[in-house]
Structure formats: structure tokens, C-alpha cells
Length: 248
Ligand code: NDP
Ligand code: 8X3
Image (tube, rainbow, N blue to C red):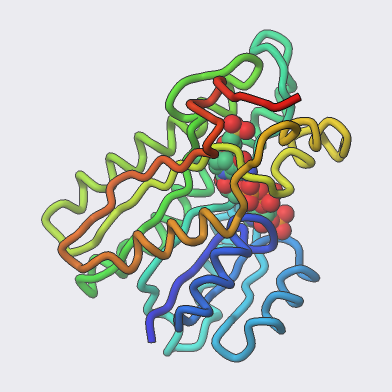
């Protein structure tokens, strides 16, 4: 039985990915900060799921949590670096320094921390797969979103760099770049403003977290000689980060 670890599995794409891989017969390690949501998902998925509460920005806590896993769960086959967020939608000359720090620390440094902790063991074993959740936002900046877009452009570069650094190994590195997915993402971005969050998905059928979980499973289940380097998944009425057709 293969083991997958998913960061930010308490909600949205991460939770859907945990469910999808669990259904497909994987042992699933779910992580995130919300203990209550981790416990609920762990109960739902049963004995083939373990929950590790930690903040991806805290390298020591992440390391301690991984060490606490039973020996037979320590061999991680797939790392999904999913934990991430956008905060605010403001011009680059007006945004909140604190929001920027949180995005940079979570989306970039958190991904690096998890990569640094888990990938050396994959290299030692000669097997593994890293699936990083980037975004269409990393392809081109959009108005008022420069810092979030920059963090996702960094995820693109870090994924490309890791693939280069692992090229002589059997380890695969995939970048999954979703477009508009209806999750808690916009509620977080707008600090709980539900109306503003709902407007993001108004007049368009957005992607669901399950759509992205399906794409992650496809990457993981490709034959060992096939490396899905990059997958851009958009809603049908979305053409890029800023070209969206809305009805009404
Ligand atoms: P959600 O808000 O639904 O989920 C975000 C997840 O990230 C939660 O489980 C949250 O868990 C976790 N998280 C946030 N900060 C931390 C932290 N410091 N430490 C650990 N976990 C953290 O959003 P999505 O599912 O949409 O987002 C998942 C990923 O997908 C993000 O990287 C996002 O940038 C990316 N993405 C989303 C798109 C969208 O349109 N929704 C499109 C493209 C990419 P907790 O709060 O419990 O810690
Ligand atoms: C999330 C997608 O377009 O809201 O990365 O930034 S978008």
C-alpha cells in the first residue's frame, strides 16, 4: 500500500485529494492547522489515514510531526504540497505587509520546508513523487494580485528546479496548476467576507476541489516512466488568470 502526505488537507483541494487517494487504496497522511477538521476527516477515512496537526511555516513542528509517525508510515511515496492561501486583493503599492509575509511564508517557504524534510528519504529509497499545487496565477500576474501571483510563480520555479535536481533519479515531480476552484480560498482571501467570496464564482461554473483531486490522482497513477511535468486545469469559461467569461 502506497503512502501519500497532503499538506493543507483540512479543506478544499487538500481534503478532496485525501478522499480521492483514500478511495484509490492509498494510506493517507493529512496535515493542517485545524485539529477539529483533521480529526473529522481522519474519522471519515478510517485506519488507513493518520492526521498530523502542524503549521507548514514551522520547520521544527513539521519535523517533529513526521518523526512521530509509526515506523511503517515513515516511507512516504507521494508528497502533495498543497497548503497555501491568498490574502487580500490590492495594488502592490497598498497591500498589507503582514498578508504578504503570510503568503510568502506559507506558499513558498512552507513548500520548501516540506520538500527539504521528505525528499531526501525518497532519494535514499530511490522512489517517490512530489506534486506541487501551483496556480494559473503563477503564469501571469493579474490586477491587484501580484504578491499571490508571485508566490505561485515561485512554486513554478521551485518545481522546475526540483525536477532538474532529481533528473538522474526515478523520482517524479509534477506541477498542478488549477484555475478558479470553488473552495474556502476566496473566503480566506477576503478575510471572511462571504459576499465578496461568492462573487468570485458568479456567472461561471468553477472547477471543484474533486476536479483537481482527479488530476492529482492521474499524475500519481501514470506509469513509472511517465512524468506529468505540468498540468494546467481551467474552468471551461476561463482562458487564463484574468480572462473569464461570466453569464449575466
Ligand atoms: P482552502 O482555503 O479550501 O484550503 C487551504 C488549505 O491550506 C487548508 O487546508 C488550510 O488548513 C491549509 N493551510 C493554510 N495555511 C496553512 C499553514 N500555515 N500550515 C498548514 N496548512 C495551511 O483553499 P484551496 O483548497 O483552494 O487551496 C489549496 C491550494 O490550492 C493553495 O495552495 C492554493 O493557492 C491553490 N489553488 C487554489 C485555487 C482556487 O481557485 N481555489 C486555484 C489555484 C491554486 P488549515 O487552515 O487547517 O491550516
Ligand atoms: C487561485 C486562482 O485565479 O483566484 O490560485 O488566483 S486565482
